[in-house]
Length: 111
Length: 114
Image (cartoon, rainbow over all chains, first blue to last red; front, side):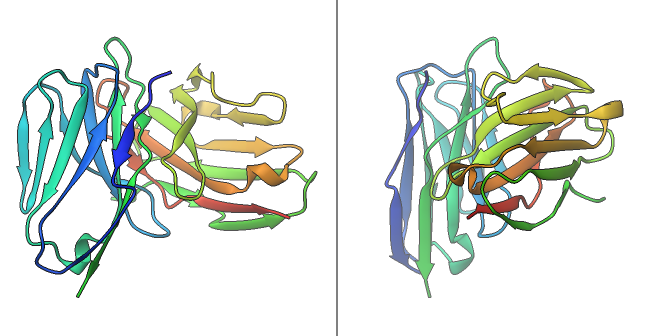
């Protein structure tokens, strides 16, 4: 059973700080997605990465897919209170379109 | 455009009682997913439909859980009888199809079994 571990589990930072969260697995993924989930809401897709070494930017968010396609990172520059939420990665292995979600990183950005 | 609609938003039931959740996916989306999310964890897939066919129900506890997607649109997920450990948020999501994997999630139903 593939397992996606995210770290850290919890992160509390001040507004304006930078942060990086990680998503790691022993499995190789054909694609990996990042979601953000706010309390009382469903997850919202932020990005999908499919190529090893791929880097995608979404405003202040930078997503990187590891060269071996086993891991990924999300870097947030100058965090804002609106970035607060649960960040989830989800990976699908080759030949399937079944995404397995990671354990999540709960981020709180203090004003 | 309306998103994925789920009802009810909250449900509190006593153990051993039945409960049902309803989901209306985004119009035109052929793929529908039901997930369960325990507190502090990521969603876990229960079942995936392609139109009206359940193509992946390997994680659905079939002794007490059932689901249907009649006519390939709306879907219901039922638990009978509910157990204390079933307390969780039940999320429905839809995507255009299996290949277009951008999934849109509903707000979920928070189930509390007492």
